Amino acid sequence: MNWDAIGAIGQMLGSVAVFVTLGYLAVQVKHSRYDARRALSQDRSEANRDILTLQCDERINRLWDRANAALGKPPYPFVSALMEQVGLTSEEANLLYWLELTRWTYRLQIIPNVDELSPMERAQFNGPIRMSYGRPGVSQLFYEGIKRGAHPVAVRYIDNLLAQPG
Image (tube, rainbow, N blue to C red; front, side, top):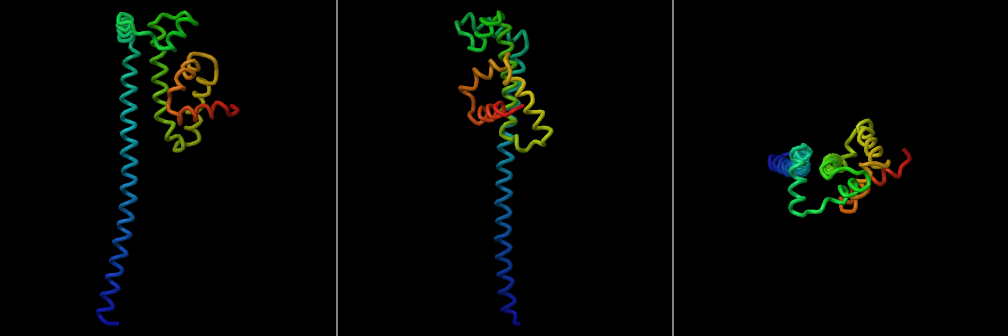
């Protein structure tokens, strides 16, 4: 074998190595994009939960309720239902609304990634959903009201879960 043949084989192996490297980099970029999207989604969800947690503070809730009433803003349908059916004050009903919205936001963060949960974690996630939205009460009233405008993937997941024998 002469040096030209060895050089040609080396160039061919170098070309194959370049293609393998490019394939590896493409996979890495795809994973990086996925991780960045997931981190952004998690950060957004955590910020939203922090804001909702603040809204559950009694002083803030009281101010919110008083200001909205003075400005003529009608209560959310969920709040109206609690006031009419249960006899809660507007402030009490709004506090339950913010609490339910905080739980909903948490669930929205998990549902797209539910397949990554271990069987035990998934059972711990699904159990409270069944108990909350599958039985009469405040949470079921909230879910029935919010699901018309909620993300269809989340609604489908929860409705399918509630349809399964528990």
